[in-house]
Length: 167
Image 1 (cartoon, rainbow, N blue to C red):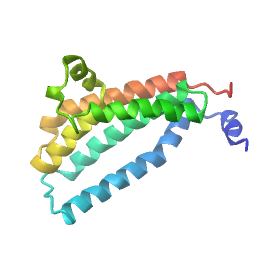
Image 2 (cartoon, one colour):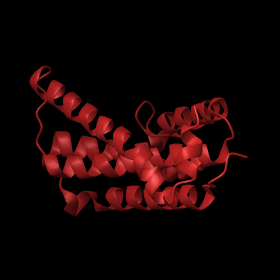
Image 3 (cartoon, rainbow, N blue to C red):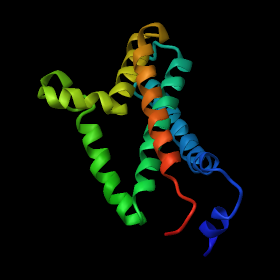
Image 4 (cartoon, rainbow, N blue to C red):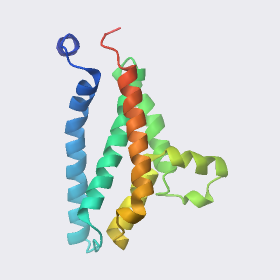
């Protein structure tokens, strides 16, 4: 309908455009985490022992890093179908290598090293430690730092690769 063409001719900077694309999904992600946390605590009676602000901060960094993955993928792909297919080949290994289904310690060494690039790995540590153990920033700062580095690096790549053209 010409919407993308109209956006591309505006004086908006790449970071502003990407922030505009990320903010709605970021809000939805925070809402989903809030609902799941409340549901888990109230319905399933899983005790929440940690500081909700620590969980919120960790979730925010996780959402930024995963949204940055999507933006970086979208700057490489020419069509939406390519982006969906590429996303499929990134997201599935992220969950497999996160330690959610299979312990990281039982993986081959090469895969254990690859897990350090996986934001899901760090988010799982933050969720488990905050929710179940009541751990704070004093212990979880390495996970927060890793998520921050991943988010900044991927957002930087996405902003640098973004082109204001339809070619």
